[in-house]
Amino acid sequence: MPDIKNATLHELLEIAFEHKASDLFIKAGSVPKMRQHAVVKELPGEWGEIDEENSKRLVLSVMTPRQAAEFEERLEMDLAFAVGKKMRIRANLYFQRGTYAGVFRLIPLEILSIEQLGLPPVLNEVAKHRQGLVLFTGPTGSGKTTSLAAVIDLINRTRPCHIVTIEDPLEFVHEDKLAYVSQREVHIDTKDFHTAMRAVVREAPDVILVGEMRDVETMNVALQAGETGHLVFSTVHTPSAHDTLDRIINMFPPHEKNHLCLRLAGSLRAVISQKLVPRADGNGRVCACEVMICTPTISKLIEDGHFGELYHAISEGHFWGMQTMNQSLVKYVKAGVITEETALNYAGIVSELRQLLRR
Image: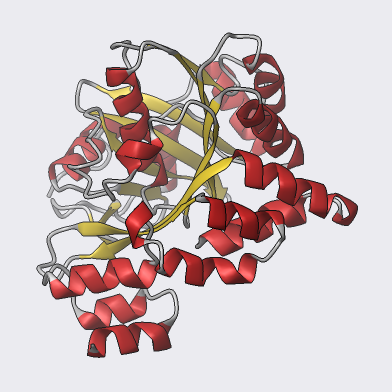
């Protein structure tokens, strides 16, 4: 049995990486665990239980003295670091029951393409826009950051432009290819999202990636950038295009709704809502997507605030590359990639999916 007292965090992460895990979990009173294909299980190797001293040692091993002091004061921290030439790690470090704990997201250094990830081909066209706002949405762990990295890498490979990313923390690293890439990490390269967003339009960007739309100010600056000749990408924690627009509208005061709908109709280019769905063979997950492309019809519905009619328009928008979540799931079921039971568990509208599967 391996000895947890002699193990380093990097060793544990490398074991998780070898077993294609997406996360490593560390806390006192438990053996090391990992998330493999959406299931949390023990890290291979018959590890012993981590005591308080070793949970503290493992967590503090990735911090500078300054970060450790800040962590002791704030009781939680996000940070990112590299493990050799294999992967980058996005870590959330926290206290639980008075002891040190951490969750470590494993991010491969290789950036997969849109095709390799199995994303809708229309994203190749979305990446060609010169201005506007593109949103990737979905719950935590749904692959938004990975999909965004694929789109940014496509632009990096095909356009001589300036790409600026603002992230907390920095996850995928983009080396300069045809494009010139500036990556800014909150708390290291900039004080906060607000400061970075106010400055970004003076940094001569063509493409801007904002890690997450967290508040009104960030959303407002992103919209302004999209309206004034920049292509802006970001993420929102919402399950569908309809919910995304509702979330954005509700972030602003009620009296601004009509004007905001007008702005969104003019600047929004696409909303891609994702879920990672377990494969039927148990070997990983596939990305199911709802895709809304802002055609004139979609833009008019947004301008008029008729968000409830978007779902029908998306379901009828095959020519433009649109699809609902249910239509995406049905494709996977028919191809034998996922089971009907799994599809129903991840359905957008369960009753509609049952009808689609019967046809």
